[in-house]
Length: 307
Image (cartoon, rainbow, N blue to C red):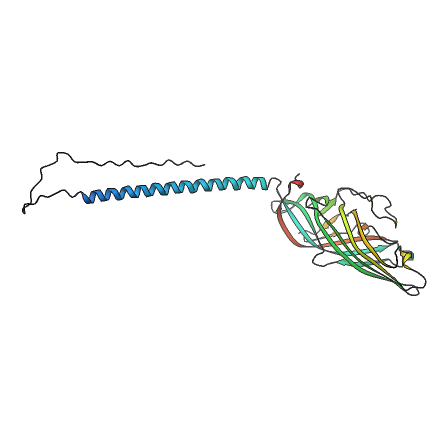
């Protein structure tokens, strides 16, 4: 707090005593000393000094308020940025849903997915003086719609139509990994696929680990229409008609590889198929992702993500 020393003027009124003799004018009237103008000047000076003192007081109060506001803002900034800053990178998602290991390979196929405005993923990474930094990387939001249809014709068609919405979100990170900004790669922490992985019966009921997309929720429907005289829907592990989807599991991820300015990334894998996802039919299924940057926002890192 600034301190101001304020000086208050002390006014004295002086009366003349025993001055020179009064002189008479030629008309017989007595000349009096002209005191009125001096007195008025003194009063004006006193008023001006009082106004100056009042202005000084007002300025002192304003300075004190400004100092208090600055101190409060400084305290707020310290509290707000205690964990530093991060970048939220939001990508529009697209890719391919790959199906393998179907009966006699009849249903093996690759289907384009995503690409709509609400197919997005937000990745939070460290800020390094205004650039994407190395260190902790998290996914805070994931949303992807998958829609495709399969026709298998063997003495009449079997049609399988899939509509599935996948979501996972957590402000403190639904998957944890490490960004190497120099090489443009995020490697995710461990995620155990759990029992049954590698077979057509894998449903990820016990997959776990900080590198999984936690609580990956799938909702939708798989509709099977059977007009074949040789096969039926049960050959693919489906009931004829609707097969509702309502499942929650922890979804493994492959590494994300970015271009030099982080405007694009891919998640493929050594065989180019992507990462395996549980299948509701008698098959194995894989998710290959691509992302195009649509938003980049510098944010205060939440305390739950402090190093």
